[in-house]
Image 1 (cartoon, one colour):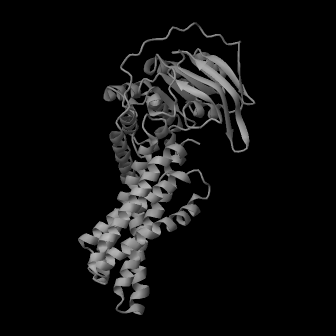
Image 2 (cartoon, one colour):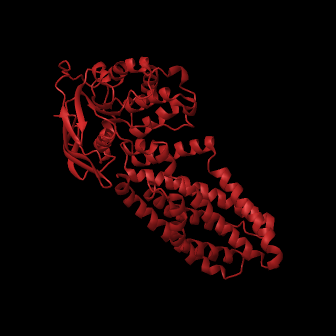
Length: 455
């Protein structure tokens, strides 16, 4: 039974047909090198086999029938893309620990130390990845791909950025960390194929052909050295992603400080511009600043929500993990909701002090928290859908405003009740509207994102 098999794969990207009826099978423990010129489709083939691209036609099966689009089939898959799936503001050990939690790797602590030792990074394990050289990042990417002792390993140019010593260590890394795995890798250097004792196939014009000049020694598959990794539970996987995002944000400080400064500055500007003109209409200014701040904070943070993962190549790492992709959406939603709520509550406090208005009440705090959840559900869905769009920075604000109108109306209605401008009894209906919007878009996101994640 093949460890990985592809049958009649056809892949189109835009108007171009990249793969034309590609069929390939690897036995357990076999190593195969895909050789071809730039633009031949090597990366596309590997991404299709990993389930990151939806073929126009054909099938892929892992370990005897598992579709890579299903989380359970990806439990024994190791993947290294064109860029290593690394978080620059985490250390090497933290990157591996996150991957272990996401993949359910058993004996993860010992496995992490073994991986660091075998790729030559044990001495630098606690350094942040942003301080690594490109070659060190490639070694860490290999450690991530081989961490769960996978059954199937897909490597896109594993020799990229490695020096001669690193290339020479490749066979040792694979033998030590994935001795039983079927390994399919792309390379420009046929010497790498020879060093790994790999069967060579050539990809040209979207078709694979066997290269009979390379005849690897007969291979006897080794047995697995530990139990197959069990995919983590859905809640545990979501929790791991939220914790990772919170740690990255705490160290990078890319979002929250900027959003806080922006919203507080907006409050000062509105105060200077309108209080003198409006006189006693302080409540109107406070309402406008509060809810415009919440909307803009969510929109600005939402624009980068999925884009940051996409740009640094870590989104692929999340999508090939054995977790339901809807968990990725929920984790991103949670991060955006927390950031937006934090900014909103800070603005409540600041406006109460600046304008001497009693905004900081239980009902307004509840309104900010629930409105943050509703707006974040909307923007997380939109961010996931336009992550590949070139004009996403312009699209996001335009897409965000129409569905957010009910949220803003409800927030204003609740705040007016808290300030006794309108009867407080009307607040219940507004809270209900916020809850409905949040539930509707959360449901849409969990249903649509798994379909949108595969290009």
